[in-house]
Length: 107
View 1: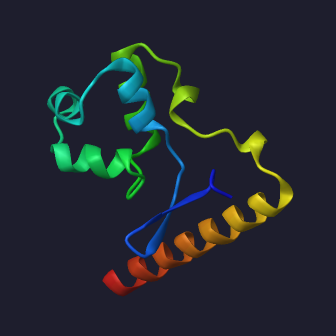
View 2: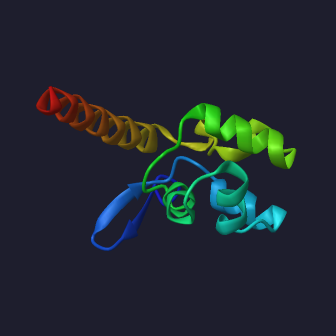
View 3: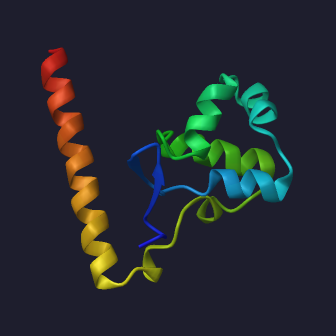
């Protein structure tokens, strides 16, 4: 289950992207990527820690800029056993439902 979530300040964060690992491999700092993309370094940090997820188009921009395969930025779903898949699906469903409720409350 360590592939799916990591404890952080009494909450659990789904590890979906590998941005931090890719940036480390390429020796690119969050600050440098922020400058290149035109974002705040804090935003890049949130992406790298999986606190929030950027749009897929942003991952594609990063991949093209640093000449990496888009697949390098994501965890492999083929490595999960059935129990891990079920946990991940449950967590992702809960996230999606929270997003739906948040959008309804804004309207």
